[in-house]
Every structure is written in structure tokens, then in C-alpha cells.
Image (cartoon, rainbow, N blue to C red; front, side, top):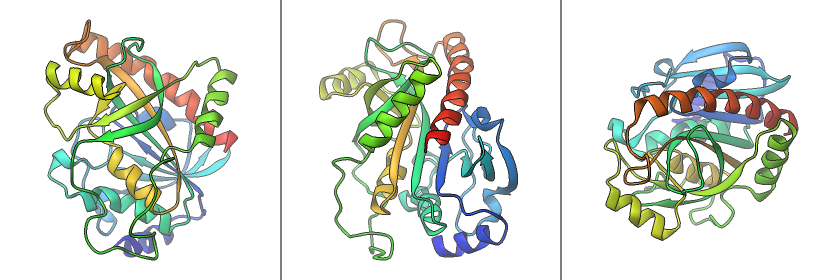
Length: 267
């Protein structure tokens, strides 16, 4: 199916992007300066599922960001929407079939690390996955990658350094942290957040990790950027404070927009 999807997209774009970007909740406008050459609704791409989560436009964009050819997913699929893990992996595998070598994944998260503040962008250095199901469960596609593969450096150390340097150039200080993946759609309880903190998680969310696993399987380099929109349940000022979240999203979008442009230029 990923090959069918790739063939469909290939006929509708004029470029051969080597960089893919997945935009998370509320971050769809982060590429508003992109010169779009093609726009395709997910519903038209073979095998792609509709993106039903709020803040996810559900379309694939091809064009130039800061003069560089990119393929951008405005919105993603989530397990909590009722989709299988393989559905979440399909867009990443499709990008690989199209020749994408570097994947930048973004998301919105809840902060667990007490040094974080809403609106801050954090570089994902590693992750913790609580869902036992893998997006690669089932028959392995050898043309994509090996059955068993190393996740030691899932988030490329070289890209972490590149992004940190890019942030410094534009005046954005970037911390690094561990992202915990929880299936949702309910938010975590204070007890769950305490557990995640003990296990070493700095932030928590409901996406990204299945895509990263699929990308590493395909041999892609991965950079993860997380926008902390609120402190998690049980933390000081934690929970669903919509005024805080709204302001954090405004600040985070602007920082993400600037950072993505600088990162893509450096790639």
C-alpha cells in the first residue's frame, strides 16, 4: 500500500524532496511561509486515513521551505482515533518510498520536567513507549528495513546538535528531553505523571513514537521537536488551563515556524 501511495503522490509533485516534516496539534501553520507547489488531501491518497483530531488539517504539502524541497504532513493519524498502528506508519513508509531520508516530527506535549515552561520547544532525545503494540507488527517488508533493528540512536545525535545550533542562531534556547508516549485520548492522571517522572520522562503526549519507529526501520534520520503547551496533571499549575494552553500555542507556533526554517536550511 505504501508503494501505491507513493506512486499516487509522485504523479502529482514536481520535486524529489529528501526532507519530510510531520506537523502536530496546533502546529499546522508552522510552515505558513512555505512555497506550496502541490496540496493533496489525505482522503485521496491510497491507504491514508482521515485526520480527525482538532488542529490537524489532514493534507500533504509539497514545495519549498526556505528554498529547500520538503514534503509536509499537516496533521497526522493517532491510535486513539481508532486507527491501527500500521495506518500510522503508512505515511512514513510512503515518504521513504518517495526518497525522503530525514524526518522532522513535531508535536504538542504536557511538561513533566519542572524546569519546562508552556510555549517552550524541547528537542526529543529519546522516548518511552507504553503501548505494547508496534507499528511494525506482522510481516516485515525487507525492502524497507530489517526485521530487528537498533533504536539506540532513534533521534539522531547529529540532528540534535544541528537543531541546537540552529536555535542559538535565531535566539531560541533548546533543552533536550525524553518523551513518553501514552495512547489517549484521555489525558494522564496525576499518579501516571508521577510514574512517568520517576521513569525519566520529561514530557508526555499521544503521538510521534509510532512514526519514529517506522522511520528508523526505514533507515531515516529523525529529529523530534516538542512544543510544551501546558504542565501535566498534578504538576504545579498543571492540567487543562485553556488560557495557558492558548498562549503557549501562540508562542510555540512562532518559535516552531522560525526553528523549522532554520533547521531545514541547515539540513
